[in-house]
Image 1: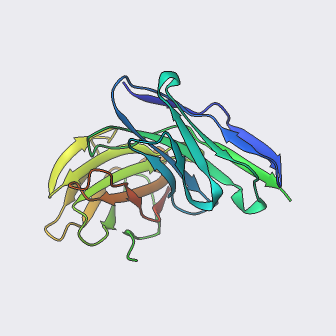
Image 2: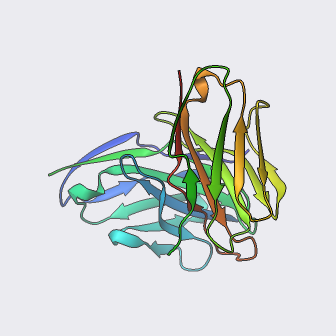
Length: 114
Length: 114
């Protein structure tokens, strides 16, 4: 069965620090990859997505992610975080070519200190 | 732009009661997904519908049922509620024929079972 692993449960950073959140998935076939953000008390919002092509994907709010097929990874990065980035971040996987459900990682809570 | 609408936003029920959650997808979206997110947990896929037919089934208890209607809205019916059913229930919608489409999430219904 597919699974998604997010290595960091809780990350605490100061403003302007760089961010990298790890995400690994287990599925041998083609996948679609997503990062969602959930601000406190709010619903899931899409940060970025990867379907094919350039493995470096740019999303909203200065976030980017790199798909490394050989490592089954899709790590999220941001060069300089802001206090407003405090939220929970979920990596999600869907089998490529299908319209099936998303499989989410456990999430990483990011706390940015002002 | 129109978003996914869920109602009610908050619901409090007692054990053994029933609850009905409603989801109105974005116009022209033909696929609806239901997810359950327990406190501090990642969203777990429950069930999905495409063109009013069940398309996939996840970890949905037998006490729950769902359907999609002719106007594409969906309802999740929950019976014999248990304390463990307390969670945030998200609905998401997408367009089946758009290969690179993402799932758009609604704000969720927070169900509390007492």
